[in-house]
Image 1 (cartoon, helix red, strand yellow):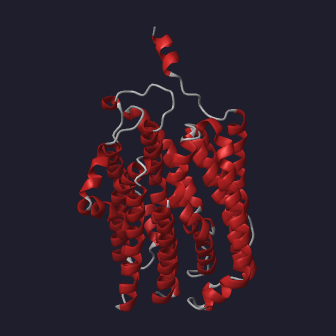
Image 2 (cartoon, helix red, strand yellow):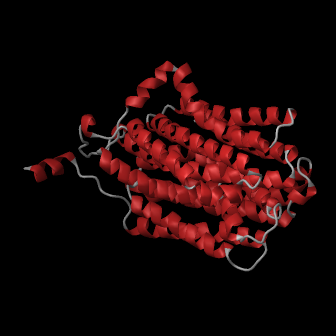
Image 3 (cartoon, rainbow, N blue to C red):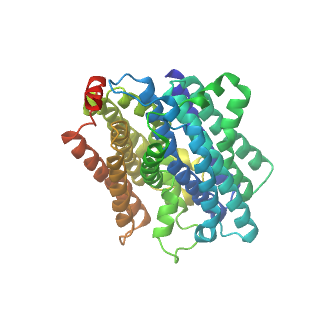
Length: 421
């Protein structure tokens, strides 16, 4: 796990660095457009992460003794095959639905809109395969390879961002920066032939059931992404059309930076959480205690540190109009702990094979967040309420059901034989 810990540090630092470089290289209007496109891509990539999560759970179940009889491998789903269909669907939908988002997200001209649509569609299609590969590596506990993949994904982005800044390139280059890491899985499989065997791994259920569970996981992880990486898109669309370009840049920057220390690493650790809970399905609530305690303490310490240090540090890299007050930065840092807790309880529900519960918790959190963003208040207050309170509603849903119906009890081999007879 040391390799995975180091990789999450690279991911978090790279995420910060890309945002800082973009803030330096772009004017306020272009920076806001980049931030919204960045949020849109990673929100949709978060939706696709449902494939990663279900692949992790399904394949890990074949490698974890559970006392139940599993179907023969020949009758079970192959995640990489399923990924082909999902890649085609997400690429097509990104293009087909472009009129609904491209004008608001990329307001700098028709040529830029076309390029943005192409980059988004291609990036999401490629990320679908990357999600499946990450799930397979996680399920088979190939953590070093998984760590290398997510590290290179992030490192490529910051290297290209630095090149774009140095050469004076503008918004289009930073749109490419956003999506280019999604092709990292090709490099891993090309340069590390030993990892190709993982592509043949199968899940614990038939293809149809795997797809149904993946869709539920995608809907839940999509709600997850809306509250994390997609929040700039959400607050932009709930602010109406009368908001002048650049008005939301400060709160978007604050939300993006304050979530990074806790939520970005936790997103990379989520496959490990699912494996952790899958191995402890008989004591799922007890297994939530330690991750939850770490999250609460980290959020509290981070909030204190953000109050005193965040604004001075941000002023070193950002113009003053992009930097919020110390109280806002500290509050948003603490609020990120709520979303982190929801990620933990959601991973527990998923590992317990309660896919509908997993989806319900995130759906409730998203609906509450949207309602709070629609109230008449400042952007900072709306963001704080949505990110601090809404995820806790989802946590309550997850824990309430898991308390009374902890996990699906897998049938033993003996019970299965008796029923067959």
